[in-house]
Image (cartoon, rainbow, N blue to C red):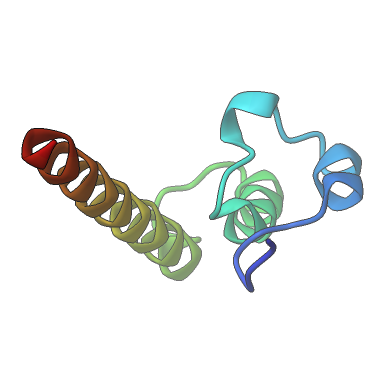
Length: 78
């Protein structure tokens, strides 16, 4: 189930993204890493991509916590 922020395995392999970073926000990580390499990792150069990636990571965390909360509530009812 791929979303607009999930890259395909072929894209991730071509970009040499480590397995630990292949998550729902992987499509945002690829251009961020390209920008970082081109700009010699200067922190102020890739701010827009970094903030978009971090927001995606946060939103994914919130989504997972909601799923966990629902699972715990369902388990408590049983």
